[in-house]
Image 1 (cartoon, one colour):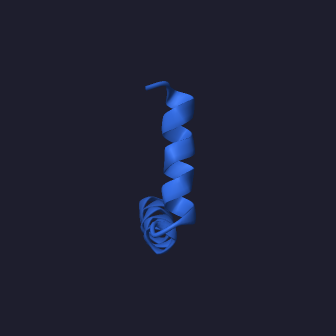
Image 2: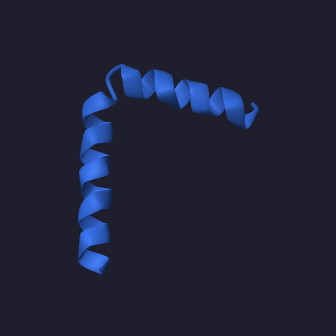
Image 3: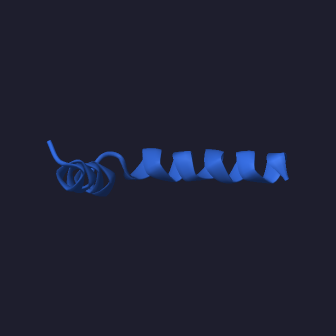
Length: 37
């Protein structure tokens, strides 16, 4: 499977049931960035 297809599949998941999980992941990443700085 090529990377482009994997990205498209990831976007489909994010647009579906993974939207909330994506927001949580963004929150965790932002929190870690703030904590590291």
